[in-house]
Length: 435
Ligand code: BGC
Image 1 (cartoon, rainbow, N blue to C red):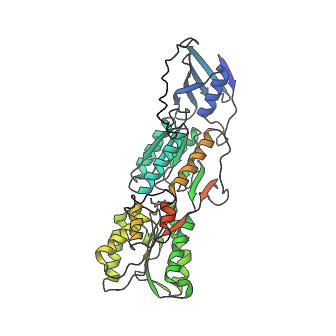
Image 2 (cartoon, helix red, strand yellow):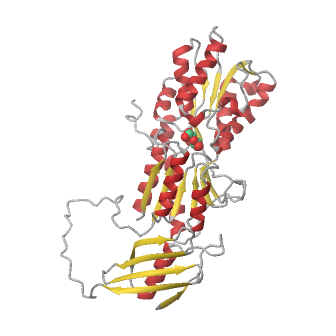
Image 3 (cartoon, helix red, strand yellow):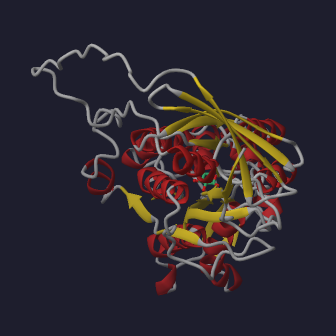
C-alpha cells in the first residue's frame, strides 16, 4: 500500500474532499506518467472518495481512495493492464491542402465545468452559454451546459446533477438570487468552486467569485438617457413617464431600477416628470420572470386606464429588452400618440431593429463575448491553480461576505452609434439585423 502526503488547497471547511486536480497530480507523481480520470465516486457526506485513473499509455489502472479520517493521505491501488511496449499506431499523414481549424480542440484536459443558465427564452443567455462552452472547449475542458427554463427547481436539480457527475467548477447565472441553497451546500462539501455569472448569488458563503457588468451603472445609463433626451437637466417638462422593471427574484433588477431612479427621482419630485399611473415602487413596476407577455399585459392596462384619451407618454423606462418589447407591443396595439423614449438592455436583435425603426430609443450593451471570455479565464485559472484575476474586492457583498469580482463596464447603444458598437465590433452582421 502506498501513501502520498497531500496539501489541502482550500480552507472552507476543516476537511474537504480533495479536488480532481490534486488527486491527478498525486497519481502522476507516484507513477511518473500522465493519467486520465476514468470515474469518481464521492460519499454524499463527503467523508470518503474514490477515483479511478487510467494511464495515458494504457498500461495502468490506479484506484485512489481517500477518507476524511486521514485527510492528508491517499491510498493507491495499482493494476497492470498492459506492457510498456505499446504497438505503434499507424499514423495518417495530414492532408496539407486542408487548413486545421484552430478553434477545434480535440484534446480534453480531464476537467469538467458545469454551466447553469436560467433560460433559453432570451437571446442573451443562449449567446452567453454558447460562448462560454466554445471558449472552455477550446481550452480543453469538457462542458456540461444546461438551461433551466426559468424554473428554480429545475435549476437546482441541474446543478445537483453537475455536482454528482463530477464537475470541477460551477458557473451559475441564478434564476433567483437566494434559491440555490442545498445544491450549493453540496458543492461546498465537495470543494467545488462556484462562480456567480452576471447575477450575484445571495446569502451563501459558497460563492467564490462573481463576474458581471456593473448593474447599477446599467440603470444609470438608462436614467441619464431619458434625462438628456427630454432635456430634463435644462429644466424642460413636465413630461409623462411610466416605469417597467424586471423579476423581483433577480437581484440585478433592483440595481437596474435603483440606478435609473436615482437619476429620475429628483425630476419626479420637482414635477418635471409625472408618473401618470402613479406606479413607481419596485414591486409595482416589476415584471415576473422578465417575460415580454407580462410586461405587455401591464403596459396594456396602463395605456387603457391612463392614456386612452390621447394623453401623451413621453418616456417609458424599461430595464431590459424583453420588457421593452412588451411595452412596444402594447403601444403598437393600443396607443395613438408618438412613441415615447423607451430604454432597454441587452441589444437583442428585435430591439436593435426597433431602435433602427424609431420604436425604441436605446439599449444598454453588455457584450456577452466579454463576460463569457472573462468567466472562461477565471475557470481556467481555478483549475490550473493560478491566481484568479478579479478587479473588485470591495463592492459586491452577497449578504454573507464580499465576493471577489470581475466587473465590466456597460455602454449605451442608440441609432447614432449602433453600427460602430454592434456591427463594426463583429457582434452582429448587417444580415443579422436584416439591414
Ligand atoms: C440580466 C439582463 C437580462 C435579464 C433577463 C438580468 O439579470 O442582467 O441582461 O436582460 O436578467 O434575463
